[in-house]
Image (tube, rainbow over all chains, first blue to last red; front, side, top):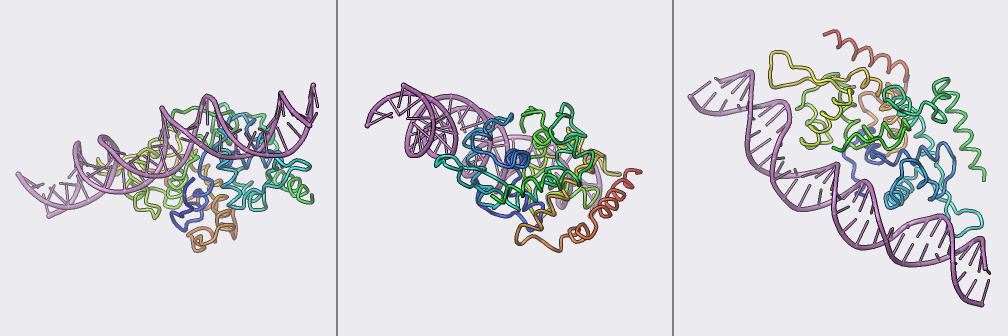
Length: 139
Length: 139
DNA sequence: ATTTAAACTTGCAAATTGCAAGTGCAAAAT
DNA sequence: ATTTTGCACTTGCAATTTGCAAGTTTAAAT
């Protein structure tokens, strides 16, 4: 990946410096919907990310404090990835992107695990999913 | 740019297929804050986009129906770019990205022309900016 | 008619992506 | 106890994309 050079002080530009690519927010999506994931779980997502890109993005997101890697119980090889609070705060943006895609792009999965729920009540959904993710933090 | 291949039917993934890069949403940002722009205006933005990338992105966004290029009054060389309705609908996502950047990234411009206003009342800001952009459509 | 200027194009080097194998190490199986 | 399996990455390399610096084109101004 590239050096952490900011193109400007604009918050949008600086955000895109971090996750402005085709993969980073998909990793956030998977963590948002499943709360924790192993490396192998990510490779099983339907977009089929290459393993070198995955390793690179996981490291970058961890360095940025967006995700947290913790040890897998009773296993020295595996790691367990989850969203940090900074990562959880990305969920509203991800939701808006999902809504836009669902409204304006053809052939997007209407039966997506959460789109319907989001459309019904965005705030309620947000609260619910955040609660679920945070509950996990007690561990 | 690449072929319009979708990696999956996920609305997030499909959205990122279109604007998942470091520049596309900055073009949307500039149109969102200034309602119309010429090619040259974009090159003057502080992030200093290369002209070939700009031309490429403008074309891609136009092909996707996110921006509209119309002729500049009494000028056959210039064009005037503006957001389509599909593009205007991206504003909520851009706002969430801006808020995240402003909350979590250091050295982002607090005095950004709109951040303060968004923070005060997001819905009100959204309405205001959309009204402004739509008023322009009467022309 | 000549100059200026804005809107792209083009050529090329550098960085990033994506694919296909490989490596290393711990856990499970024998 | 030794082998085998499986998961988490690495590595090598070709293909694509990015970024920089110059063009080129066409219309507007002088």
